[in-house]
Structures are given as structure tokens and as C-alpha cells.
Length: 149
Length: 94
Image (cartoon, rainbow over all chains, first blue to last red):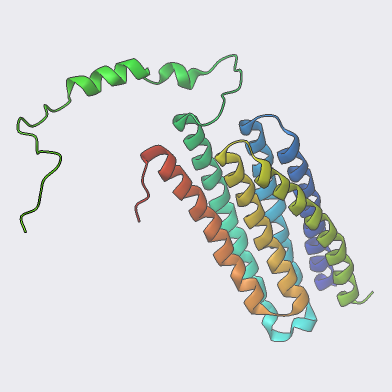
């Protein structure tokens, strides 16, 4: 009785995760902007990858044709699920910060961008760099030197 | 209903949807306008491939197939971090 409940719960998790994955793929293909695409991608990683892995772990606990290997399989599945839960938001956040601060691609039209207002402007940073710049060495090495044979 | 037959029915339904999603991710990975879109699509592909490998490991009754999913998930994370370090700092240090 309890094994059937666990199996049905795991199967439902796998099926719901597959549908999440399809929705995330359509969103990643159709959204017009990088930041909106990131929204679809995070749906795809948490709903489409972490949820089916936990469901597969529940299924593997009660799947008798595996024999005694099913506990190993459930352990691997739960390990992968916890890894994805920790890793996927971190990676998405790092990619977004790289795109924002590295100014990659075209920025979408925003009504308010308060992070842009708080950041120092590029001309101020250039002045700071120029003030603290070290003077070049007086004696420069000649560009072309002939080696003594 | 037999447990093997029920799991096979679930697997067939999930495999069709997963394959269709993989094709859509692959389209975005090929024609992404910037490099970040390609990295994002490959990231999603890797995590979903890891999830699908665990399900396939139950179907084929092999532990070795499922244990590759751990490496695949960590590899996707490494890709994100290396891209961020390369864009923001201009170099990749170990």
C-alpha cells in the first residue's frame, strides 16, 4: 500500500517535471530579451530538472526489478537533486551579473534602473584611474635588440 | 497493474516531452544572439540531461549510467563560473 503511494507520487513528479521542461523550452525560445529568457531558464532548471530527479529517487526506492541496487539509485538521485537545487540558482545569478556588469548585448528599455544610478559612472572611474596611475619608467628598453652571438 | 508496465508508460510519456524540449533548447543554443544566451541554453540542456539520465538509469537497471549525472551537473556549474570570470576579470584562474 505504502509503496504504491510512493510510486504514484514519484511518477506524478516526473510527469509534472516533463511538462515544466516543455514550458521552459518554449519560453526560452520565444521570449524577446535575455533577462526574460533567464526567467524561463530558471523555471526549466528547478521545475524541469530538480523535481523529476526527486521523483525518480522516490520511484527507485520502490522499484523491485532493480533488486538491492535500488537504494544506491535512490541515493544518487537525491544527491543529484540537492546538487541541482544548490547549483542552478548560483550559476544563473552569476551569468546575469556577468551580462549586466560586463555590458554584453543590448540592454532592454527599462522604466527605472536603480542599480545603474548607484553605480559610479565610467568617466569618474577613468579620472580615478588617471590620478592613481603610476608614472612610466624613465628609461625605456629599446624595442628591437640584436642578440650577441 | 504491474509496476514495470506503469513505469514504462511514465517513461514513454516523459521521453517524448523531454526530446521535444531538447530540440527547442538546441535551437536557442545554435542561434543565440549573444554568447550568454548560448551558455544559458547549454546550462539548461545539461541539467535536463542529468535529470533524464537518472530516469534512464532506472529503466536500464544500471548504476553507472545514473552516477554520470553528478558529473554532468557539476560541469554545467563550472561552465557558468568560468564564463563569469572570463567576462568580468578577463582571465580564468584555477
